[in-house]
Length: 275
Image (cartoon, rainbow, N blue to C red; front, top):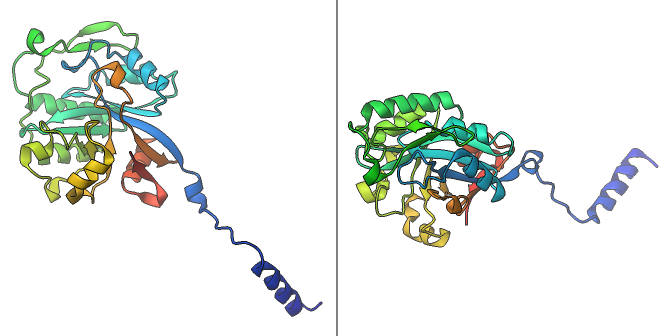
C-alpha cells in the first residue's frame, strides 16, 4: 500500500472514533484545598480563651481543613506558636493579621513569611491608639507557645483602630509582599462598606471576604457591583466550634502562598470558589 493510501485509510478510521476532549496537562495537576483564612487566637480579646495553638490546629485538622490563616486583631504575636503547633498535622498555616484602619475598617493581611508580618506589626503598633487594655471590659490578650503554655499578656488596646487609612494599610501590606482582603464586607460594622458606604476602585484589595452571615446567592444579588474582585469566605472564628464553619476552596497545585495568589488572579486555570 502506498503512503498516500495509508494516510487516507488512517484518516477514514479516525473519523469513526468518538471524540475525547483532552484536558490540558497544567489544569489536570490542580487539586482542591479547603481553606479558612480568618481565625483568631486567644490573643484577640474578643476570642475564647480555648483558642490556643494546639486546640486550633487540632480542630482545623479534624474538620478537614488544608489551609488556615491566623488573623488576630492588630497583632501577630501568636502566629509562630500556631505554625509550630501545626507541624505534625499536615496543616498549612499562613501568617496573618486583622488590621483596623483609621476609618475602623477591618482589613485582613496574609503573608508567606512571618518576618514580613512582624514588620507590619511594628508599623501597626506605632500607629495603634495609645493606652492599656482593660481586660475586665474587653477581655484578656493571652500570649501562648505551641504547647499552650502562657507566656504573658499583650497590654496594648488591640481592639482599637490605628491611625492608618485604608489606602495606607493596603499599600503597606503590598509593600511587604502580602495579600490584602477587605474583611466581612457584608457586615453592618467594621466592614469597608459599612464605614465608607462603598469600595473605592483604587482601594487595591486582592479579594473581598464574605462572612458566614451571607450565602453566595444573596451576596451575588446584593454585592454584584463588586463582582470584578475575587471573593472568598471564611469563618472569622473566635471559638473552636466555628473553625471551618465557612471555607473557600482553592484549586491549585499545592498549598503555597504563590498558588493562593495565582488562584485569586485566575492564572492557568487556578481559582477560588465557595458556596
